[in-house]
Amino acid sequence: MDYLLWRKNNIDGPDQDKYPYPWIIWYIWKARNDKLFRGIDRDPLELVRYAKSECQAWFDANKVIPVVQGPEIEDQAISLDNICLLDGSWTSQSQFSGCGWVWMDSGGKIELMGTRNIPRRESALHSEVKALRWAMENMLQHSTCQRFGTDYKELIAMIKDPAAWPSFATELERIETLLICFSDFDISYVPRTHNQFSDFFSKNS
Image (tube, rainbow, N blue to C red; front, side, top):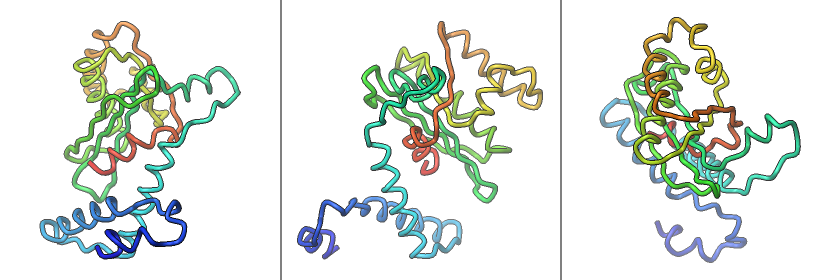
C-alpha cells in the first residue's frame, strides 16, 4: 500500500505502469474466498502474473481497432458497431461456467454489459449457447440490437443449421423461440482479439 499510494508516483517512466493493482487486489480477494470456502490454495506469484496479464488484456481491448482491408466477410467480422459481443467460459475443474456480453452502440461505444456464473455445463459449447441465449434475452429487454458476435465458430454453425446438432435440441429450441422476437437477427464471427471484454467478463463472473 505504501508503494501504491505514495512511491509509485515517483518511479521512472510512470506512463509504463499499467496500474494492475485493481486486478491484483481482485484476484487476491478471489483467492482468499477459494481458500476459505473451497480449500483451494493459489500460488501467489502465479496469481500476480495472471492478474497482470488480465490487466494488459483490458488495456489492449481499449486500443482503437485498425481498419483492415480484406474480403467483405472480414470487414463484417470487425465491424463493431451496434453489436452484442458474447462469450462463455468453461473448464472441467470448475464448479461453474461463466457468461459475459457487451453491447456496443452505432459509434462503437460500450452502452451495456453483463456477467454471470451458472452451474458448470456439459461442455464449452453448452456454455457458449447459454451465453448467446442470455445475451439475446438482455438485448430484447434493454436495446434494439439485432447483431451478435462470437469467437466460437461452432456456435455460428449451430445457429445456422440446428438440425445438424441433435444433442443440443433442447437448447436450440429455446434459441429459436427467442429468434421469433428478432426481425433481422444476425450472428457473425469476431476474432478473440476483438472480443476481449466479454471474454474477460465470462472468465471472471
